[in-house]
Image (cartoon, rainbow, N blue to C red):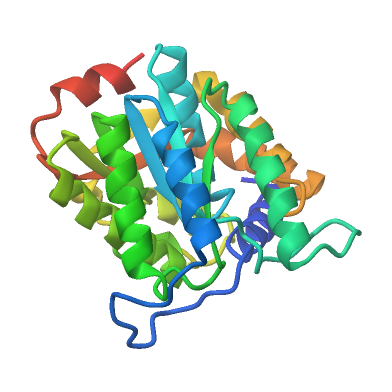
Length: 286
């Protein structure tokens, strides 16, 4: 591997994982603060308008889908209806453009970018934003859980995709939304499969050997249920990433394309009903 490519990947991984500050749980308990009546009404109205879907992605921030966007594009191309839901609008993140957007303005811009990313993935459905404060998913645990339960009941997906217990790299919002999605999944009894986005140790070793450091939290290869080949949807994934202009500049997008040339897959751990993989094996195959 060339020195240039190694440096590029190292730079990419620092930027990609620094989109929002890590906020680890500090002993908060489920329950948390309450939203205004107006905010609650808006969420209930949006959820009531949802239609059934096949695959439901539940995330903390716009751009979290990057870890699985190639797979979502692949499923959409197979005619599966994919819905992406975000607990926050990423309003506490950084603006990597020269506009200096912050808070409400940044949140609005990131929602627009996510809509554009959904088009790049070729999803026919609009993403849903619950608009809780970025960095405070734990604070709103009870409300977010109730919302996610309602979303699952309304959309009746076969597959739910979210973060695992490590949040992919330890972000507290990622950890919280993964726990909430798992609880809602178990409470609903509707979906058949619950998947966590993951990074295998073998893939992580490729990243580390390329000089990318050891930022992420890899999973032992034996626990990876699916390695989804996204070679036919690399452009979708890169295009979706390119849509998140406040989070990824053009250099970073180009570096992602280089990284995908090495890995060319997305990995998942099935944490409910493992072994009953007939449906997903068919969906993820060529």
